[in-house]
Amino acid sequence: MTYHIRVRVGALIIENDEILLTEFDDPYRGVFYDFPAGGAESHESLIEAVKREAREEADIDVEVGPLAFVYEYGPHLNENKYGQTHTLVMMFDCTLKSGSTPRLPEKPDPNQTAVKWVPLSELEHLELYANIGVQIKGYASKKRNIDLLEEHKLLDKTSSLI
Image (cartoon, rainbow, N blue to C red; front, side):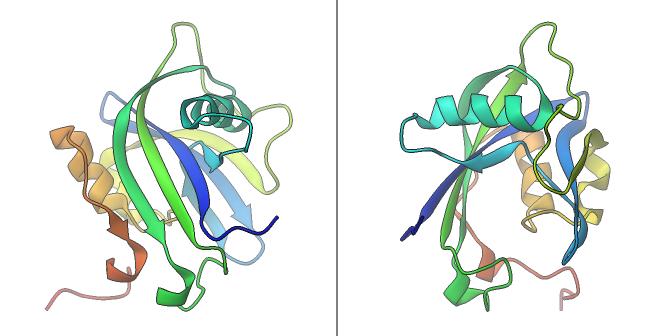
């Protein structure tokens, strides 16, 4: 399928100073982490897509709360480092429904190896699908919406502040 801009959604789940992440071992990128997230399908609302992705990637049911932030990846602004698809990701602040325990689903996504609770203090030291660990930690401490995050304006992990 061809997209001008692909719409993705995700579940941002934070409990007890830990965040729920999905782990992938990709043949090109190695081990990296993401949130239960994925593309919205044409027949569903964004909220429905968040719930479906949480079920598919972490085997959980969630209550979908407010929009936490919007992240944009523009391949033409980032030397195609994550591929050629222009993507807009809307992350929603979610909570687990009672009795829902995160785990690797029976049929995980390709290359998905785990579902883990990770301390927020370790977030910026992990290889994330998108380099937004600092922004997530800021969101967790203030619980307010974050401005639009544009990949080409984020610091690379190899860059240093001057």
